[in-house]
Length: 80
Image 1 (cartoon, rainbow, N blue to C red):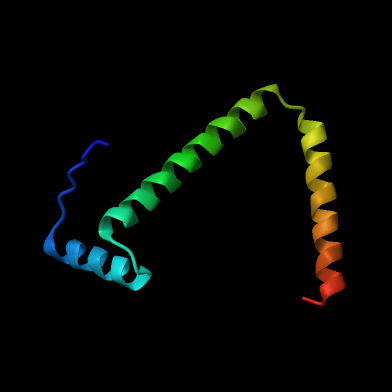
Image 2: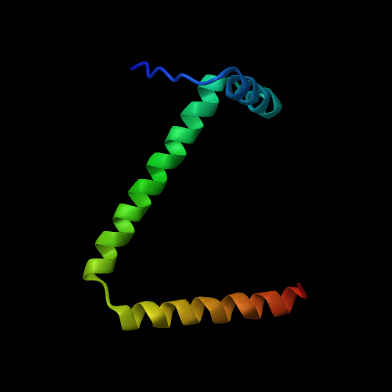
């Protein structure tokens, strides 16, 4: 495991400690969760761009329309 130093001013450090404590975790775990989230977003974006290049726009629009239709029908069914 590698160490990544992070320098911040006192106010940010205090805020990070507060966030970590309110989440019931450590600052280390807070950063680990943040990094994991950022990496997952970048990987999802890369997969999306790859699929976009080889995809079928007309089929994509059709699928989106079907999803919206199901979503609105489900919303009407639950009354929300």
